[in-house]
Amino acid sequence: MTEWSSCSSSTLGPRAYNNADILRRKIDSVRHIEEVFTEYLNIQATKIRERFFAAFNIKSEKIDFVLTSSATDAEFIPLSLALNSTTDDLLNIVVAPNEIGSASVSAAKGTHICQITPAGAAVQPSLSLDGISLERIETHQVKIREKDGELRCVESIHEEIANQVQEGVAEGKRILLHLIDCSKLGARIPSLDFVDSLKKQYGEKIQVIIDAAQMRIDPRLLHNYLSKNWLILVSGSKFFGGPPFSGGVLIRGKFWQQGAKKSPPLGLRDYLTKFDVPSSWINWQNALPRKINVGLLLRWEAALAEIEAFMEVPPLQRRTAIEKLGKIINTLLHDSKDVQRILLGSQCTSIVNQCPKVDGLSQLSTIFPFVIFWPKGKNKGSKLSVYETRLLHRMLNQPLAHGLPKSSPKKHHKIMNKRFITGQPVRLGTDAIGSLRLAISARRISDLFEENLNDMTSLDQKLEIISNELEELFIKIELCLRYWDRFLNVDELLF
Image (cartoon, rainbow, N blue to C red):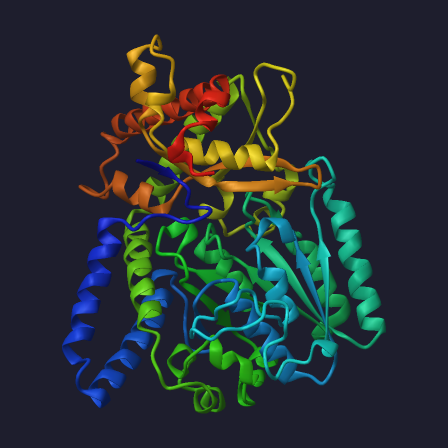
């Protein structure tokens, strides 16, 4: 199985699994002594925060770190803090809603996002969390794509945001503005200069939330955001390849932190425990359940194994490997007659070009989205729909050689039996066009230097093996399109 799905989720690697298993065994050894058990897990939650800060070289004195079951659940944290910090109604501006967590908009409204909460409570999606008044919250979604899936020009996106901010402030509302760094397709929007200009104009009337859940971000850019007192949504999954449902929130600044001095909305008891918030949040700790989310600690333990392994690779080696791998992917996308790379234009660099100290991950492409064209038939030349792209996504992850014509070359049979996991399909615009994604993960880079962190001599040999695997992926795409109708009848697809 070959994975390129870190923009969606990843299977657990040996390094992450082993670390989580070691912690699980230690937890089991003290589970029977309640007081010791509780204190031990509280210490582990503190260690997770400390290790995260150390990995990203963050000075933790003035920064709070809340652990959440996902980066989507994390949306409840800034919303709750803002409701506590001001008596103003809120205007929550969500940018690129189709290219972030699928339930992020619902969470930004203060409503439940699925039928079961992390605490196991049965709830009704679209209803508000207890203690959150929907009358105080308005949301506005800023789409970054046209109907046909093409990117809107950045100026029109900025204009829409500026108009919403102006109207909201005129109505006496406090603005929560999301800056996406980066989206499911790799976009980074709006620009830092633009957001800085809004902050200069409106001051405390506007608060910024950074959606960095993909974690394809240079540590120095994280520092830049925190220095501005911008709240940051993070995760241990996505780029770093940790387990899904390992989210978090980095919090700095008076506006946000004064919200922690009041008790949280009652409904957060279904999403957080007292051990998920910092010990300095006394009113939150007193209001939240004492039970411990052991699974969340294990997931973060696994994620930190991958984060720390990636950070151990020297920056030059990391950058070189990502650049070379990106060049291989771009070449294959360019040479394939059935696919077309989705280019992001200025949106991809609008943030990093304005932060001159950033010279690492934030400047590099690690998500490569593409659309697929029908090579034959009545739809020849048209793009696959979202539904068709989902079918192709499933085909790529199934052994399908037995669906080929018997006369097919042995090479094709071998390739069709291989499993390739790409990022989940993303809908482009409103025309129901689908896109697939190839995403570079931290684990793939760390594994290239597993034997020797400074070994650059064997890098090209290892990349050649990866290049051959990617070439087979594109051959499988071509074969799936060629024999589409045959594969639709294969039972294993379970459509």
